[in-house]
Length: 51
Image 1 (cartoon, one colour):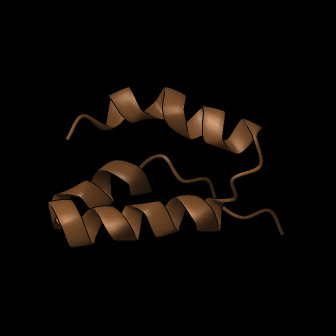
Image 2 (tube, rainbow, N blue to C red):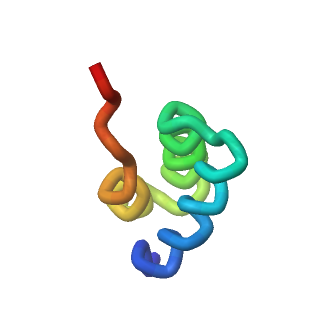
Image 3 (cartoon, rainbow, N blue to C red):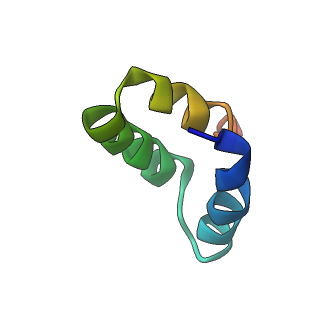
């Protein structure tokens, strides 16, 4: 439940091709396993889609 600790892992995932949708899916899995507060941890780290 320490979102700041996940930032380096999220950036590494992006560097190897993970999309924001992929990261959002991970957040959804976190909800299912760790509860709703975990979504807020990952959603703070997602980037807006470029239009």
